[in-house]
Structures are given as structure tokens and as C-alpha cells.
Length: 213
Image (cartoon, rainbow, N blue to C red):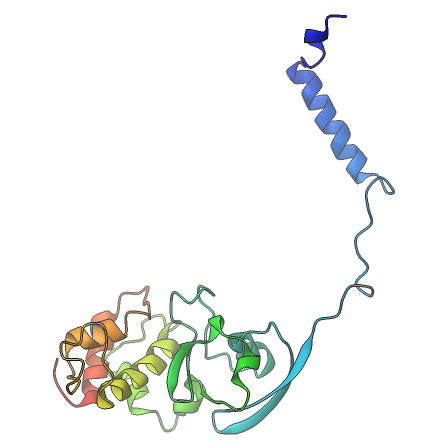
């Protein structure tokens, strides 16, 4: 036999070998059995105690649980939305110790003793937070999916300006922060509205700020 022909296969032969491989994988005993769930390593858990919307909460969580999943899946506070789950859309924005964060990018165990505020903690249907009421008035919610994160972020934007915390577009880093359209756009840029209601959102924030921009 010519050694140069040892590795020459027709297309039909290649397909046959592929079919035989699939069959072998499907036959019990020819492949390793899956790991039994009972013998699999148990996840590492930890007790997490924090305050959510003014109420003390204590959870026993897998240490890999994000703050977003702790709020939605364990405390059933589903107002906070899971959008991209990569920290790029802002739908999961909540307020932790007076600072807005993307809850999908942080682990719950990192916030032991923290004070967390979600959209449910800002206001109630009978007594809306001024920012919630402004979003309703100016139709800043559209489909509503990103709205909880938008509102939580907007509340903190006004606090940042009030506390003279500069942004990337602030001209004088040592002076008093000024409320302006550019400042609002920059500070809200991490919250995406796929409906495109940005002008309405800006109008709502402006009304709560008590000014024009």
C-alpha cells in the first residue's frame, strides 16, 4: 500500500466516521457519566445582613450572588430590572449608602451592613417620590423597563450636583457645580432608554431640580 494514501479519505468516509462518533457518544458506558448532583461540591454560602428600603434583612446566600439577584430572587423586589447584566444599560441601578451603583456588577456579600434603596423604597403609589411623579407627568417612562434605574439615577444626579461633585464635563472642578443640560446628559449617560425618551426624562429631572436647562 502506498503510504502517501494512508490519510486520504473521501467525503462519504468522513461523514461515516462522524456518524459513528455520535453513536458511540450516545451509547451508555462509552462516555463518562455526568457528575451526580449529590456529590457535586456545595456552593459556599454566607449570611448577609443589610437594610433594604428602611427594613433590616438577613439572607443566607451563595457568595456568588449579585446584589441584583438578591433583591429580585430572594427579596422579591422586582422593580429593579435585569437588563444587559453587564453594567452597560443601567436598568439595575439602585442606591447604596447614598451612591448609585449597577447592582448586577456587585456581589451581595460586599454590602454587609449597607443601606440599600430600590425604586420600591423611593415612593408608593399613594405617595410618589417627586422624581417618580415628574416622570409620570412628562411621560419619561415609555415602556417602563429602564424607568426604575433611570429614576434612582436621576435622584442621585441632583444630589451630586447639590453636593458639588464634579463630572467629566464640569468646567471648574473646584467651583460650585451648575445644573445644566450637559451635566444631566453626562451624569445620566449610563442609563439607556431604548424607547428614546431622553428629552422627556430630562424635562422630568429639570422640574424636580426647580430650574431650566
